[in-house]
Length: 299
Image (cartoon, rainbow, N blue to C red; front, side, top):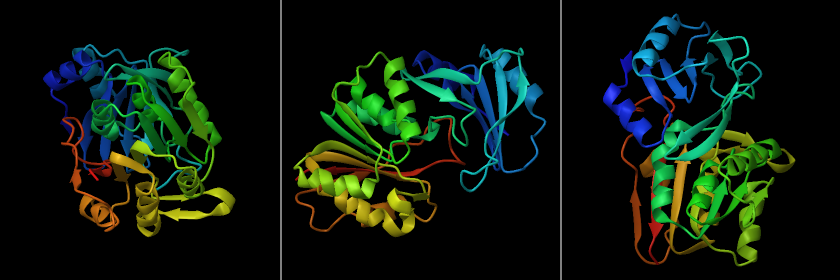
């Protein structure tokens, strides 16, 4: 088990980030979400790691109310809700507000496979802040973390997700940051219907986030498989990109490497195209890491 160095933990906390991966191994990881710890394992039985988590968090001055366990499965399902391994008291909460770079996010461990924030996207959310876009389109937005970050730097946003419940959680993330919903749209719709509609309306965006699940069902039972449909999605997004726009291409599909994602860019794009991936995070080196590629279209 590789535990995060205390100096790295202190650096994250100094940067107003209290959600990060504390430890990782080949089939096991421990993540901190404010006052909660989440143990994720490929095995179906909870590992006997609670005493070590408590000892290390005490040394690091990280107060913990609950430790959850989640069995890592290939996709969300009925048996994916985390269970409680340990709690400091009977009334310990299951929902926590966490901070990342000074931005707040609501996490809830009772709602299924994800508590609401994917830690491996931290560097990409930071990059979006640095870009300071005027208009952000967040596709497969889930709980709208990229939209919230965009809103904190003054961008108007559109968040698209087929799940209305996820968008409601996204609105809660706006609220916990004191952000008005004015200038922000939340569309419970299929991305493959929304993108052509935005093009017909002549809408253009400075940042477009494409972070779909590996597999999902869209409107009217439409199947989405990242390996089969990602290229079409990129082409639709490029059609509504403003001059100088940035696209974030991201996926958990293991066959879609950054090089493969780059090959999906239409050859007809005007001007110079710059691509890069953000440096690896100090706390996440393996397991649950998305393949991502930033694209800047200079034409």
